[in-house]
Amino acid sequence: MRKIAIITGASSGIGGATAVALAERGVDSIVTFNSHEDRVRDVVEAVRQRGAKAVPLRLALASPTTPTTSIRKSFSRSSK
Image 1 (cartoon, rainbow, N blue to C red):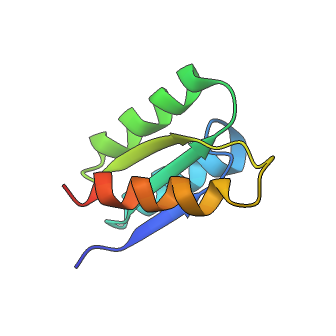
Image 2: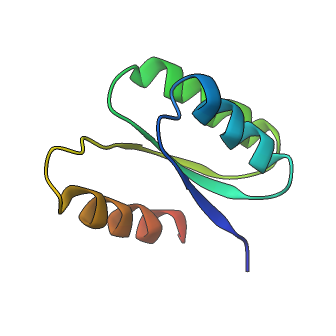
């Protein structure tokens, strides 16, 4: 079974670098972002080039139930 990481703020900086570094170790990712969808697409592509999967997920943390619901949906998409 492959490992899956949930990486917040993956559209730039440390979050994007973390997704790529984990991909190099064979870890798939759910990469969350609130803005800069174009940047997160670049991160997803970099992850895929390293042989791992990445599922982008726009995640606004305004509601306390949003993260749980969104992450459940992402896990079901990533397992396909």
